[in-house]
Length: 117
Ligand SMILES: [Zn+2]
Ligand SMILES: [Zn+2]
Ligand SMILES: [Zn+2]
Ligand SMILES: [Zn+2]
Ligand SMILES: [Zn+2]
Ligand SMILES: [Zn+2]
Image 1 (cartoon, rainbow, N blue to C red):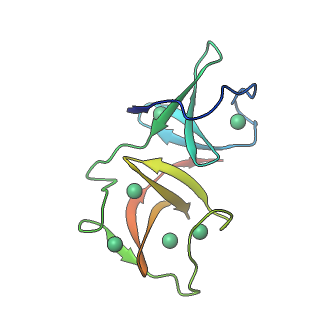
Image 2: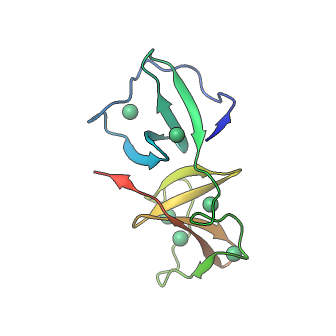
């Protein structure tokens, strides 16, 4: 579990079931995807910044990743319709339960991510 320095103002919003943010499993707990950040809601009301771990199941970079080319020429970016989520030291997009990392003319597949409905 990487902890990142807080990059937001503290927010009044308290994440919880039904709060409207996408929930993803991170190790032994559940985090919330919030504006491209991974938020871990603590019981005391504070929020920790998390980043998904780089593992053999969720590799970083390009060399170990499958390459995906979107048939429709989709390019990930702000407002592309996919949720951005931090993974290691970079940002990925959640596409059909997988982490996509845009890289030149393809996406690197950084493995599965468990999204809870
Ligand atoms: Zn929330
Ligand atoms: Zn976490
Ligand atoms: Zn690549
Ligand atoms: Zn996208
Ligand atoms: Zn990644
Ligand atoms: Zn993609």
